[in-house]
Amino acid sequence: NSMTTEEKAPQKDGYIGVSKDDKSTIIILLILYTLQGIPIGLAMSIALLLQKKNVTYKEQAMFSIVGWPYSLKLLWAPIVDSLYWKYMGRRKSWLISTQYVIGILMLILSFHVSDIFGDANDYPNVFYLTIAFFILNFLCATQDVAVDGWALTMLSRQNVGYATVCNSAGLRIGFFFGNIVYLILESPEFCNQYLRSVSRPEGLITLSGFLKVSGVIFLIVTTFILIYKSESEEINSEIPGVRDTYSQIYHIVCLKSVIKLAIFLMTYQIAFVAVEAVSKLKFIEAGVHTETMALLEIPMTPFAVIVSLYISRFAVGLNCFKVFLKAFPIKLLFGVLFAFLVSWTYNVKLESGGFPTYYYVVIVLSFTLHQAVVVCLHISVGSFLNRVSDPAIGGTYMTILNTFLNLGRNWSSTVALWLVDVLTYKTCENPIYNCNNAETASKCMAAGHKCLTTVDGFSVESVACVIFGFLWLRWGRKVIVKLQGTLSSDWKTTKCIQLQNLESIVSKS
Image (tube, rainbow, N blue to C red; front, side, top):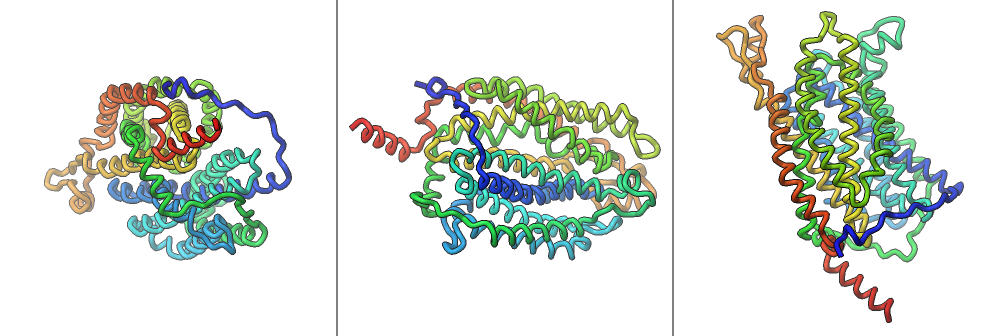
């Protein structure tokens, strides 16, 4: 029998009360995941602020590397799972050490970030910023491995499902503070207009101040957990060695069905990369304020939750890829729409530097509809990954598949950002000068002229991505048919199949 006829939709359990211990554990998990989301949101904020400082898109591509640790954590996750200090505990050893280092690093960085990021008129050192936030995200990704593993034993068996809720909610809350709250309070324009009676040249909080506060919070929370939260011993659980875990990963990755799915996951997002990686930066380049981009995210969060709940009824079980195939071409059209909106932004900009009300209405509506399609694709793909993951090694299996999914987004985003400058062609108003690179462009502007964009790299990328997307869809439909027709055994390693057969023989005897 094919997998599509073998598996049934999971049944929902009845309501089970949450004990007092589990309630306190849920709060702790929520706090830990919230802390993890702060550096992620802050890295996104810095990318937007760098755009205000007119850094090149090649430098934006370099800074985008800070998000890679979450995609690559599978490389060192087996070490976190297998090596630890017994006195401290399997999960607590890594959690305490990484969070103390994160807190200390944030405090150290707070004293130097002003020099690295530069003042209003200084050019930032993007290379040092990339190193600093790559290390921060590497530590946070390591903390994520430890927290995910600890959550399975911190909560009672009947309430372990709350770990996923804490993960999703905590990361969103942390991202909200690191991205939206920081960008709003950092903006002098927003603070002077809405939060102050007397105007000042800076916002309510600086990057240095935000890092200092975040570092202190990390240290306080970590110390509290070190003293008051003990790690229960894992009874009757054999902890696999580092070598065994890497061997297991190797055998999963070598499965033909997994290779086919990996190619699918690492290529389909190329079609949307211009919108996902470049569009927000282009809106800021066109004059939209960073705090405005942050405020656009506020209505998106509850809307995404509502859409997720609605779409989940149609994107589970056998129908998961039906939603994907309907949403994919619609999202491709947003590539053309966003390229038009960026161009339109320059035309409707007011002399005061602001924009008319109808512009914001169109932008909010466009972002909202786009978010709905993004959620449809996300749930469809996630539903299929859950279906094909071998329950015997579900945690490792899902981590591997999610690694391919995240890598598909990250590598394409980095390349797309790097190509914007390559595909952009500018000329100087005075034909004596040219704007082929930063040096010649500065000479043109120093002479009192402007560099005019004749070919916009973002527009070129948007069109290329749409064309690629429709071509990819012809191949993708065939792959989807093959993936849906696979057997359950196609997703299991030989070792797992042999183990299942042995269990079957034992049960029959």
